[in-house]
Amino acid sequence: MSSELSQSVIKRIIRQVGLECVAQGQSLSETLVAFMVKAVVLDPRNDFNMDRILTENDMQDLIQLPSFLDELLSEQERVLEGKLAPIVRAITESGPRVQEEMENVCQNIVTYVLLRSGLGSPTDIEAVREVTAALQSVFPQTEMITFISLSKKDKEQQLKDLAMLVTGIRLYNKQCQKGGSGIDDLPGILNKAIPLATRTLDERLNSCQLLAHRYTALLESMQEEPQRFSRLRLFKLKEALFNVRQYEAFLCILQSNAISSAQEVESLDVQFEAAMMVLKNTVQDKTSIESREVFPLFMELSKLWTGFQDEMLLLNFLTNMADNLQQFLEIQSQLFPEEMLTSLLEGVTVKSDVERIKETMGSRVNVSDFRNQEWLFPETTDNFDQLLIQYHGFCAHSIGVKGITLPGNPAIGILKHNGKYYVFSSKEAAYIFAEDPDKFIQLNVEKAKEYAELIQLLELHHQFEYLVPHAQARKASKSSMKPPPKCESGTQTDTHILPPTIVTSYEWNEWELRRKAIKLANLRRKLTHAMQTDLSHMRRENFTQVYLPKDAGTQTKRDNSSNVPKPQVFLKGLRGGSSPTTHMVTVDLTRPLDET
Image (cartoon, rainbow, N blue to C red; front, side, top):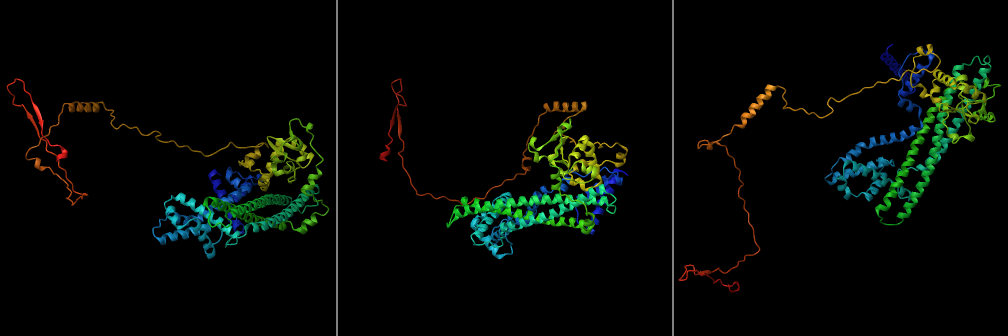
């Protein structure tokens, strides 16, 4: 079968499995279905030959639950932004000119503040009145003209600031018993709901662990006395054990998040009370106060309240997930009813994980027995409790050899092999594993191919980045085989990296160049002449444009005149005389200015 055809078949199988699950009332994501299909493909017993892999993003989305909580809040924020987008667009893109249009914009801002804060509904008249009054105190209609002149981005930011200010004002009024319609007591609700959720998780975790301990005891007894448990299917019991261990791991994650949520709510309570006290001391009974003093306090209250809302959202998510996971524990009772387990466990000692660890606390690996192995112990290793243990802390020997998930005891000694850390359930298991670690690591990988649940439970997703054709794997040696990495890639180059520099006047033909040279030489000796005759000058088309005279006048403040003396200057001696030398005399008879 070609690669393209194989991929088409697998896609069809994934789609069909998803439809079958929906028909049975189970809604599963395509990623999860694909994961399970590929887990079946990996099983050598099924004789599949396929080289398509899951992407790293699909694997991370499947196995990492804690990071999903942060993504949940981000997704909730995106959903809220999407719901508010139409009303934000109506506010920011409007240009009200008359009073009625400005009132419509104000009403939209009130609706936006209510939806943004989540404190009340736009249909709640009392809540609308409170928001309107609070909004007018910080954003009077006289500032609407300034708001309209802002850019769209600045408008959106101011809307968010107004929502936070109004939220803080309403929270303060609620504390002073002067309002607060539609505002729930989130701190009180959380302080009651989180302990209840934690107790529920503890109860389910204890039930799950008890079931895992009973399954483990049965599997150990079946390996010692196979005839006694002949009617019990070993494969199904192992699958049930791994499924319960998965459920236990998820419940531990949920329990850890619930504890973190309780601590966060406790911290928010303290901060909220402190911020409210500072605000009361600042406002007191003053009739007016500067905005730069009180606005930051209102916004701080709003931020803290948003923290309560986020914790409420996370708590609902954790509770719903725990309820959805509960069905997997109920399925166990259908596969192995309580009466059946009770009869099978007669005479069998059921040990808890804690009891198993206590039994091996006195035993420890002797480092001198190993020359090329590095062992770590609590008293000789810094940050011993923070080491990243492989296989989710289970015994590295019992998984591949016995097919059982036994808790590892770090006190026996942690083996460091190829930069990874392994723990064991007993000293004997540690010695056997240390003789040939690569062999037992490969056994664990093969066991995970048989039981797909182990891939996620033991965090072995990095071991299955490639799908090896199993027909080749059976013929090859038992050592780990991985095909060379392959990927689809492509490159593209620009046709012209530099800007075009085409010279349009370029000529390659020598004769064309000669023709242009002769033409230029002739032009140097040419002159252009023009003349105009009496008959031709009247044939021109002339246009002119004039402005009609306009009536204009000026008026001066007063009429005045002055009279200056007329100059009278005479020259004597111009005609000469008896003397050969002419003597000219100038006589000025002009009257002085003050005599006129």
